[in-house]
Each structure stands twice: as C-alpha cells, then as structure tokens.
Length: 494
Image (tube, rainbow, N blue to C red; front, side, top):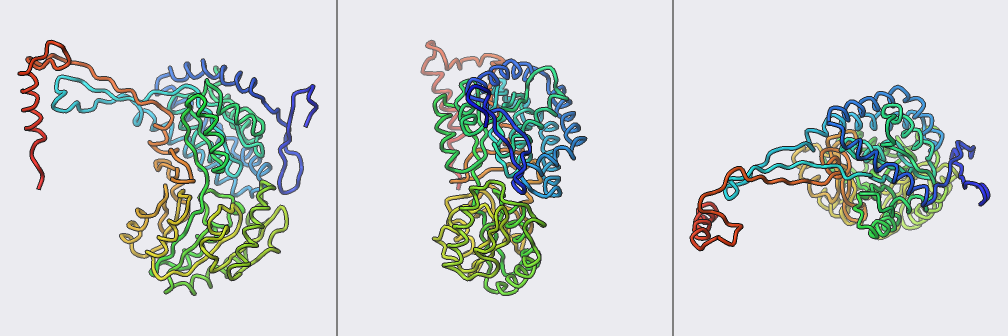
C-alpha cells in the first residue's frame, strides 16, 4: 500500500500464485461522494431515454461483453483462480441476464391500465414502475461477473445509474465491466466502478445520494451494510449465502444425484452461495448413493478440476469445519490433510451431528456432509432446520412428489433433478429467506426491485349523486354506497 501522502492503493492478487494482477486506488468517502454526485445527472439522462433507446444500448453492451469474453474470462481467472472453463460459464450466464433484462424491462415496468373496480367505475387507473436514481451495488469475489450483474443489468434496464463497488479481491473485474459499458454508453457515467476496501463499501452504503443498495456477501457484513443504509433510510436487497441441502428420494436417479451433489459441493472450490453443503439420502438408496459419490469424488482434484480458495481467511473456517466433522462423524474421503493452502481437496463426512458447526455454519469450501434418513419428509425437516434459506435441490423419480417437496423447502429457489439450474433461467427471481437475506434479483421481481411503483387514478366522469369525497355528501349517498357494497360483497360463500 502506498504512503499516506499519496493516493492509497491496494493490489489484487492471483490466489493460486500470489502474483500481483493489478493495483487500484482505495477510494475514500469523498471519492465515493464524487462518483455518486456524477452519477445523479447521468441517472436523470439515462432514465429520461425511452425504453427502446435503453434496450438498444444494453443489447449493445451485451454484444461488447460477448466480443471481449476472452478478456473478461482471463481477468476472472487471474483474480479468483478459478479455471477458465468455469469463468467462461459464469460470463455466459451473465450475458443471458443482460439480454433478458434489456428485452423485458418495458413489458414488466412500463405503464399499464388496471381495473378500478366497481366502486371506482368512473376512474381510469394506471400503474407503472419508475427508476430510483442512483443504485449502489456491492459485489462478491466468488462470482465477480454473474452475481453483481444480476443487480447491475436489472437496475440499468429499469432506468437507474449504477455505482459498483466490487470485492477488494476482484477489483479488476469490476473496472473492466464498467469500462466495457462506457464503450456502449459514452455520453454519461451511467455505470461506474469505485474500488477499495471495506471503508469504500461503507461509504457507498451510507451515501445520501444512493437510492438503493444491492449487496452480496456474508450475513455479518450485510448487517453492517444495513446499519449504514439505515442512516438515510436507504432500502437494501441482500443476498447473504446459505447452507443448501440436497435431498435424494428413494426413487431418485442415484448416479445423477451423486454427480450433482459432487459438482454442487466441489465446483468453484465450494465457494458458491447456492452450492451443496449438506446431503440427506433416503435409507433405501443410501448405500448405492455413497458408492456412486465416493467413486466419482476420488477422481476430483483441487488445482485441476477446480481452483484455489480465493479468500485466504476462509481457509481457517474450512479447516475448523473439517476438524469438527472428522471428530464427530465418519470420514469417507479426505480430512485435515486435504487442506494444502491455497487448495483444499474434496472432503466427504457421514453422520455429522446436526448441531455441529460443519452442518450449521456456511463452510464455503469443497466439503460435504451426508446423512441417512428414513424418508424424504425427514430429509426435508432436517434441510429446513437451518438459519439460512437460500436454495436447495431435490432428486426424485416422482415429479408430483418432488414439486410438493420443493414448495415445502424453506428456500428462495429449489432445483429438481438438477443442481443450481434456476440460476440459468433469467426469468426466475433469485434470493433467500432468513439469514440468507431478503429481496430478489433476476426476473420480473428483480426489475421491480430497482424501481418505485407509481399509481395514478384519473376521474373520467363524475358519478351523479355519489360525490363521496366532499363535505356536501349526504346520508342518501352513503346509503346508496352501502347498498352497492352489500350487493357486491355481502353474499357468504359456502
């Protein structure tokens, strides 16, 4: 870091090698205030464009990102350490979300007539969703393109300007995303990035010019962001991770379930908020499942099939959870020796007590606990007994039963006979309950998240003898209204 007499800077590092990827300024509260102030007129200009013009420019941005996909992928690979194949999949998913947001914003948010009801028969009622102004996005390091773009693209499509504070582990990705946007929209700083450490994110959350914050990160950090937002009553959408479960029913496709559990747990070194951390398997297929799972897992290697642990401090959490699981459960694969910084090889442990840290707390590493259950209902009870509620997975041969289990699962999203598949469907909202946060990104709900509803009622003609909002109103008018309401609503349903 530079001396205090100069602009302070920080380095982003390749977690696999320790090499410096880039050096970026630590932007303080004054710099953040300047960025937000510059974004305010940009928001007015951008929000003033018609739907077709914003759509065209966002689709052009999508084309620019697609054209430079190799450059974006390389930056993700350098700053997170994840294999380029995984980074490519992440960027492609982000591109599909930019496309969906651009193409559907007008349909979801544009003005539309709504029924005024019989009492308001003389009114015309209109609903539309207007932009907020400047939206602040505080992004994570594990999916530094896909996750923040779920807020950025939808906020932009809704007519807002965006100030993005990427993780201090992946600042280069954030800078590049904003630079590419400027190629499509050079007139105004509609989307800009501020870099720095925690103080920069706190300044963004606490800036009075920011009309909403979209945050992704830990539950503990979300509480601090929420406190900063409270100073200005700034609304917040928060996605705070999870401890997601996968349920294997008695009639499930066992090889497919084992393959999904392994990928859901180990891909991206387990650093996936909607990854699989717990598995509950019905007794009838438990032994077959474990044979499939361990056989497949034996061929998965850290540093080859997935990358390093990106955040060094997470190693301590992973090690503590592995030690706890091994001490209280039955080790199937790996153990404490699997931790070889910055990599962690796959770890699978059976019969870990449900009240242990390895089952209750988010590990965010390539580990998996597996438990035998009597039936899918017991599995669901255990899956739901968590403070988190982000996502989950169900494998079953019975579609109707799987759908019923999915509805009862305490989570924002559930995948059936697949893993994390909901993330690839732009029309589906993404978010959780409980310690996993609140609010939604993606889909129509994600577009509305970055707007304010505007309701307008217009009197088309006066109702004779029914001027109810006047001091000239008489008893006869009220009597007529009571008769009308009784006719419309007074019949009991049997």
